[in-house]
Length: 58
Image (cartoon, rainbow, N blue to C red; front, side, top):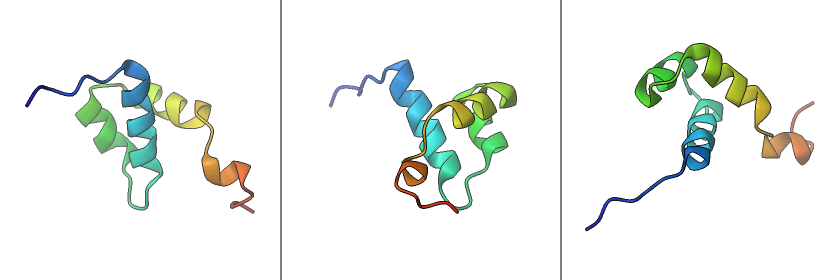
C-alpha cells in the first residue's frame, strides 16, 4: 500500500484538530509534528474553530 501524501495545510489542520480535542497537549503535539511551540500556538489561534462559528462557545 503506498504512503498517503499530505500537504502542509493538511498537517497544520490535523495538528490544530488534535490540540483542540479534550486532553490535547500543545507542547507534546508540537514536538511530534516537529514545529516550535510558538508556531503551534500561532496556528491554533489563526485557524477558525468550527464550534465558535456555530455559537458553541459562550
